Each structure stands twice: as C-alpha cells, then as structure tokens.
Length: 354
Image 1 (cartoon, rainbow, N blue to C red):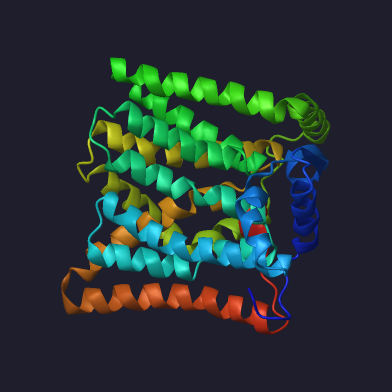
Image 2: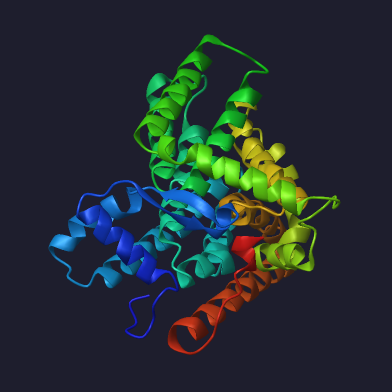
C-alpha cells in the first residue's frame, strides 16, 4: 500500500474528510451508494485516530493507507486467536491466519480505500475475543470494555454501526433466554451508548437517511419479490469465502457449536452468524446492503480453519490436503493483490457490495 504508484480508489475522498476533521469539522455529511445514493454521515473516528501521525508524516495519503495496512496485518493474528477461542487447535489458528492473510474481501477493501469501514470493522474481532475470554457471568468491567470497542466502530462508519449494534443486541437477546442480574449492565450500557452516539453524531442525519432508503426501496420493490436475487450475490459469496470455504462453513459452525464453549460464550458466534444472515435476507429482498460479507469474514474464516484443523489431525494425508487447500486459497488472493499494487490488476467489488 506504500508502493509509490498505488492509491486506493477512495483515497481522494478520505484525504478530503481527513483535512476537514483536522480543521475541526466533526460532522461530515455526503452521498453514499451504500444507502441508496442518499445523504449519510461519515463519522470522524478513523481520521481522529491517525491525526497524531500528521505531526510527523507530511504525506497524508501514506499515513492513511499505511495505517490501514498495519490494522489489516494485525487482523490476521486476531483471527488466529479467534479460531483458538472458538475451539480450534494450533493448526486451526495457523490456517485462520493464512486464510485472512490472503483474503480477497480484505484486499478489496484496501484496494478501493474503504478507510472508515476497515478501521471500524477492525474492532469486531477484539470485541468477540473479550466476550469469549471472560469468565461467566461477565463482570461490569468486561461489558464496559466490550461496549467501548463497539463505540469505536460506531464512531467510525454508519454501516459498521448498524452491523455492530445488531450483533451486540442479538447477543443480549440470546442471553435473555437465561436471564440473570448481570445482564442489566450490558443492556444499560447499550442504551446509554445509543443515546450518546445519537446525541453527538447521528441525530443530524438518521431520519433523512432512513426516509430516503425507505422511499427508494419501496419504489424499487414494486411487483418484485426478491429484488436482490442476482448472479452478483452468488459471485460475491464465492469471492468472499471461496467455493471450498462455503462448502466447509456449515461443518465449521457445527464444530463451534460442539466445542463446549458454554451458553454465554456460544451466544457470541451465534449472534454474529445471525447478524450476517439477517442482512443477507435484507439484501435478498430489498437489494440494499451494509457489507455483511466483510463483517462476517473473521467468523467464517475461523470456522473454515477449524474444519481444516481437524482434517490436518487425521494423519499425514489429512495434513497434506489441509495445508494444500489453505495455501492454494491464500495464494490466490495474494496474487490478485500483487497484480493490483504493482501492475494493472483490479479486484472485483462484489465481495463488499453483495
């Protein structure tokens, strides 16, 4: 990403927003294809995070893109940790790291320069690790830390905010199946967070954005049952997770369910999966999306890696097959990324837009 001739497609837009935040403009409103070409808000979180670097780095483009590359590299290790927490062994963690290191959706986000999405999405895996690592019932400190990570995402990107709040809310709904006093804290923290972000940021645009999307969707959807059902939806899924990954995903989720995580820990991947499926259905019916394939990427890659980790434990042949599959999938993405940075290659946006 620091190669001299490389520049993310949206780098100019992000530099403009970065300079606005640098000069004190915390509320940035602009059109967004993600919300049916209506007006929406671009929170200042990602730009505030890299702002201190502007004191020592004059090339703001390199500052933004270099920061994203560092975050993406860290994500590979976080996904490896997630695979371990979800019941995978050492090989599963290695496989998860390699699969993320060659992940086409992650490369696509960087190629198109989706800075806010990358920054906000980064906090998803640490949030999951916090909730999976804690003793149950979880303490106020644990819920407070998890809510803080959620807020970083909410103050970074509106799409990440929608996905994150839905995921966190579904975790709490699942946990209410076995209610206890400790759940009052996360419910209160989520409500307080909602009031905070609405009062500081989203109150300026929420109603306008929702009205525009609702109006556009109602006009599009006249007389058509599944507006979003198109070959591009299938292509997006295949590019995001690969055909092999999609085949292994159900088995991986089953292995996670059988990993003896306990009810409270199991609520985290279950709510994550349900959030992805919910927005897949929304996309299928209304043809509007919030990049749910990218949101589910750490969980999906962990599930795939857990299956391959089990396969690698089945003797020498199983190990060879598992490693060959992982390396083939990772190298495919790396070759595409190499051609994009150093040549005239171009990654398909369908893993992010469908």
